[in-house]
Length: 217
Ligand code: ATP
Ligand code: MG
Image (cartoon, rainbow, N blue to C red; front, side):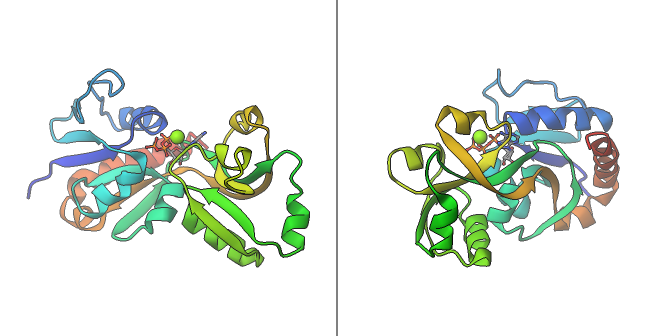
């Protein structure tokens, strides 16, 4: 059986924060995706390569087996649905929270209390839909792909659902966090067939990641 592995990562924080986990598994990535235009990066292990994809595409590559495993945020996994994916380890990296934010001065509490229909702009429509449904709040969801903070400023929406870490982006745009929906971190995701067929090669890496991620907590 071919035990060559492909790991899907996104550029930026996921790549940067996965590097130490790979190091813990004795694997070095020999090229920097910020400097190279290559989408396939070799590693010190001739049987392991890294593919660089959009953060929200990681579950898709792994689901279809184009990558055997990958690292994806809980936010991305909830939107994707997690179909065909085994999620053995919460890696405790790329931590942030999913929150509701509104323009400073907007009375969110009364809007919600009065049963008004709230217009919510977000990239995370599944999470937002479930959150407001559970609260019994009627919402019109407006799907965006980025720069959610702009929504309330230009009258596109009353509120946004977005990821927050320090809150500095919200503050810079005169928005306030009015509700925290959930804590977010990144998970290791593994193709279910690969886990069976390439277990010998995969399991030691999964174990090393799990052990190293305990230190992140
Ligand atoms: P793209 O840039 O392709 O649209 P993205 O903005 O989701 O995708 P990143 O900013 O690299 O890509 O985020 C990757 C993951 O890191 C997210 O899915 C989320 O889980 C987590 N994340 C996002 N923003 C933050 C943040 N400010 N602090 C910590 N973790 C974050
Ligand atoms: Mg981002």
